[in-house]
Each structure stands twice: as structure tokens, then as C-alpha cells.
View 1 (spheres, helix red, strand yellow):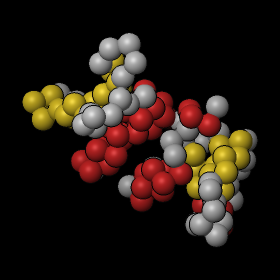
View 2 (spheres, helix red, strand yellow):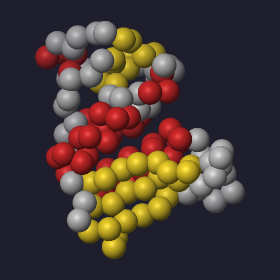
View 3 (cartoon, helix red, strand yellow):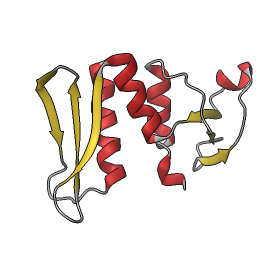
Length: 124
């Protein structure tokens, strides 16, 4: 189930850009160890300001946030049966839309979404 949530490093970048939606889970990361996903946790005001706990949004939640708050469309689309590319574009202005791939690497659906979200962060 962990693959449904954006990675902890990306969640931190989203927080810096103003993402503050209620989430079903939190990332717990102390002493530079591997982040642990905690489901059904509630953050207090102190937790929200903490570097140890970070909201863990679902990919769909982040896609909705970009579309509703920043008018940016994000999705992953298929290049065939086993590979995907990310897509980022301002709603209503697809002339500047980007198709995101990684040279020489087949991307999974969630890798493509991650790549698209990283690119969308640059647009806000």
C-alpha cells in the first residue's frame, strides 16, 4: 500500500510549496533513517512543525491539489504495455506541456507520476 503515497522527500518539497491538506498517513523519519509510513495518525500543531513527522499525501490527492490550487494537470500515460511517461501542463495552455521520460529507463506508473510532480513543483 505504501506505493500509493508520495515518497517522503517529495512530501517535504510539497510542504515547502504550501501543501497542507489532511492526509491519511504520515512519514516518520528520525536521525536520517529510512522513512516509515504511519497510517491513521493525527498531527498536532507541534507535529506539523516537526522535521520528524511529515504528511504523506496520496498521489491522487497531490494531482487534485495541483489541478485545483495551481491549474496544473499531472498524469502518467502508457508508452506501451510496461512503461509510462509523466505529463505536466498548465490547464488551458498545453503548448508548454511536458512529456517526461528518463533516457534508457522504463518507468513504472508511480515513477512517472513522481517525475511529473517534481516538474510541477518547479512551476509554482
